[in-house]
Length: 571
Image 1 (spheres, helix red, strand yellow):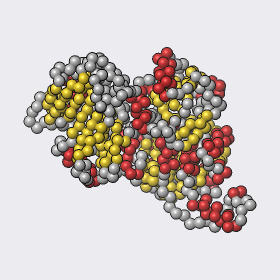
Image 2 (cartoon, rainbow, N blue to C red; image 1 turned 135 degrees about the vertical axis):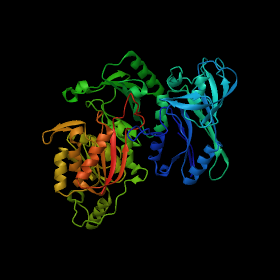
Image 3 (tube, helix red, strand yellow; image 1 turned 45 degrees about the horizontal axis):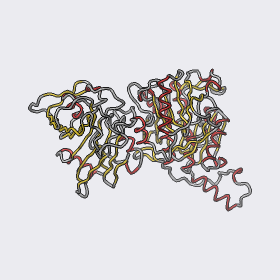
Image 4 (cartoon, helix red, strand yellow; image 1 turned 60 degrees about the vertical axis):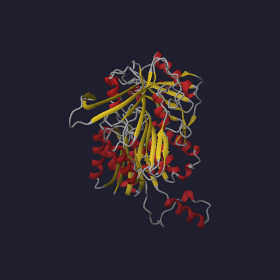
């Protein structure tokens, strides 16, 4: 995705399907939010210009105030030169055309109006690059994956102004709408075939002319291109490929899990879905595909019925390994409804491992005085007094993390890799043993960490009575659960009780992680409940960062966000 980066500028190739910035506080992350909160060196990024969600191509961010001022001035004075390519299946009259009008918003779209005094002018220059039947003419700005499709024309557009949708409006009103741009009368396609191929400007510090470019890939699968832009295949082999209606497959979800594809829906696979699975298997060079029938009555479903069933290729082994952000996890298709890892928490696991939650929000822990009364007798057997003192110092220097509802301990592994001492708490011994194997897969000795089997609410009370405190407390409960000790837990009703029970275990200036995948629970209600519980506990929120699911689980009107996560530093 990154085309160029220095101390002042960041130029990236935005994939289609990703907004430049988030349209609202609880919607999916845009490119700007994803980048700004991804790396500390990108924390001060500034948006200078934008691309529509379905438009791909070059976009430039400023990294410093000086760069911000310089680029803003260059855009305002029209010193920046931009070039776009798009496809159309309509006839394009003539080789060149310049369109000049005023644009007025009309609902979700813009319409062109004659020039008049006081209005903002939009001006676009078009040039026919290759006409229908002649699209195989070579051009350095078309990616080899495109290959050329004879019934479309390739058009270059140069916006001389920077009005919203101006290329799309001007192309449509002149009879050659962008292919896939149904908002402006274009023929439906897999994507809006509009790409910002090049941008030229003066470097804000050196003053030298610089040009950033990225070839158009109109023939590529836009869904896979989005994932490829955001996920490094050398370090991550597990991610979502098809996310329901957001990827034009309502009710159907497909994950890549290493050498396997896992399909999920409430019904048996249809022939079009089977064909799509075959296509994905071929493109990704993956050998096998499984299908799982989704049900809302998991507790009443036999394990054999809940397990994914093979569709194509050889059967998976009892256990297999995937990699996520260079961390290894054991998965299985033979253990019931879940395979061992929730992929939508990938970015949150990364935050634990890197210690970077968001711009200006790091997992920084204040130094603590040594406790001479702290002893770990089982850990220091057969050690000399000097060795025991060194081990006590080492353990006390480690940040501490409590992972409730730990499942197979994915969060705990990432925290341990970052140097934390973890306590994993879960109602299932089987999953805790699975978690220990995940520790071992990553060269971490489980004996250096704690694994507690039992009811979460019961153990939160026990740990509080023992005055145990942690630097980070992780709350990621199931939407619904039931135990003999605490009874029924429903996230929308009982989350505040969970937060109240966890607060006594959180150190001053510690970080509380609160997450829920309750699909029908509005995010603003979730946030209000969590923050209200903290205030009721006489604690103060010092820092706050909200995130939805990662971009390979794209958010749309047809497929709204469901995962809600709050990172909170609490005094």
